[in-house]
Image 1 (cartoon, one colour):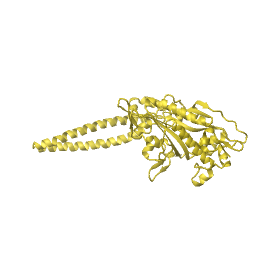
Image 2: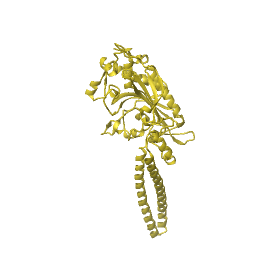
Image 3: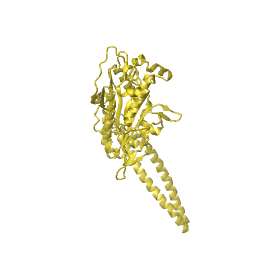
Image 4: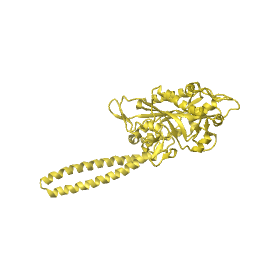
Length: 423
């Protein structure tokens, strides 16, 4: 959430920045600043009213002691009128602030200066590529056919048990899933990320804190009886560990990693783009989250990108890193880098990670602050990244490593799988 101070002092800057995200903010920003002016004026009036009320109330006892009953009664009437007026101001203020807050959450985060202009994924900028694309034989199969051939993922059984987008992993397929999760967690903890195991359901306050609510209700599974939401990513519970927290100047960096199943009501269509593991409603993902001082967050972002790149490269998968344009970024992000791997049998790039800096946008919603070296309370910066999302990693591993009679397992995973190939 953007701060009122920024909107009040630099409205044209905000409007121009949000135009990079193809968001016309002028009307909302102008309304917010009118309501903010009202908020401050009402607070000033309320403070004056309460101060006068307190002053006059203190006079009543003295007048009564002096036997000036009529004067005391007159002051009592004035106090009663002031109480009525202060109640009216408080009600007006609540209504004004409610409207103000409802508009504040409509504004996305500002993109940083490095974000390129653009409207769609076609305008994203490729900043790096790595590992060569393999050449497969003529009889290569997409991963959904390989899964059936080797009986490692059952999509039909998932439909029977739940519905489309909920696959069942079997045998070596299940072990491959577990191996990837453990490998990613071990790699993350080896560079200082604290492993946490959070709940996979969160309350509304947590959804609001990281920006999923009220923006993405349609994508989240909602347990209505308890008003809990199934997590779309571990980012939500892990970042919310520090909701309403004031960190010390020496508490940084905060580095956490977590594995969770993730649940998303992905807008579905038909065809190869959503077939098999390409788009699921439930999937496994390992996440990294960092909380940093503002002046150190972009160095932390670079570290996260390098770490995720090392993970992808170690699997031998062809990959590319993209800097997202304004039109393809999330509502809450200030800058995002996507990692994609090449799926040789499908002949297309598959997104497997997004690494983002949210600057102070989430922290303002979370009330996540720290005391700097001078003891001044400041908003922290939050960052997160997938390290990694499993489904499309598995899809690319199966397709790119297929041979005529088996699928080879990357060397780094063999100590975790306990086997060298799937046959």
